[in-house]
Length: 284
Image (tube, rainbow, N blue to C red):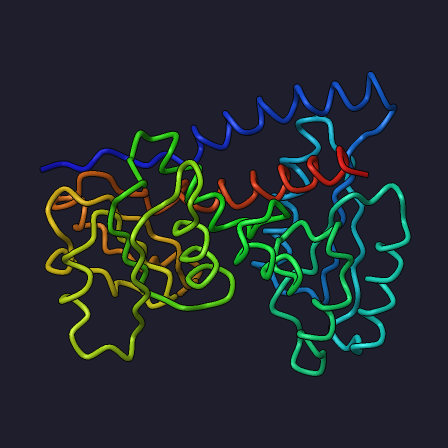
């Protein structure tokens, strides 16, 4: 069996085409150009490149970019001041604080200070709470991107068994909440497991849709996959300058669908960041 690719580049292009139409309508009817803000503390290479890709993608579809760079020794108070400025800026409709923050910064305090209406990452406690209730609000970008990628690729979610390896706040937990909601493109039976489970395969081999989100390179091996399952790699680490995903490449010999090592979930996360920002501009 050779798995079909879950092509995040293709799906992201569909999202951007939809957003261009909405952006043009905002500009024509209300004179509004959606603005994405980013706050980056320090000069971490991967984080800086990721922020750059976000701005490039948004500018390409007619959005405005506003970036605030803080030094690596910035304090919690410095970051909170930047957050307050973005909260008050009418040209910033949605923004993110790039994570992780340096150890001297109180990450929880910073995230809690973001205006929930401008929370482009969808990770504010208020928005995560609304997600548990099934209320429309900014939703976490990576989970929403995974959902959209599956839908655009023709993978049925409703009534299927989704197994998520990883329980982090950016992928595992919110993705479980999202796909279990009783709404279109969700309504799945969801199991969340983690690296502390003694027999991981006892769970993963039951999955119609298997998501690796633990950030442990190669944790999803072919023997853990039910033949024909859709397999999504949402966790990764950078090792020696190269992307090391949770899902091993030879899983493609067993799976029915699989994300590529490059161009799977990553482009969808950025696309959903843009979508949250455009939605915030429409609601402003």
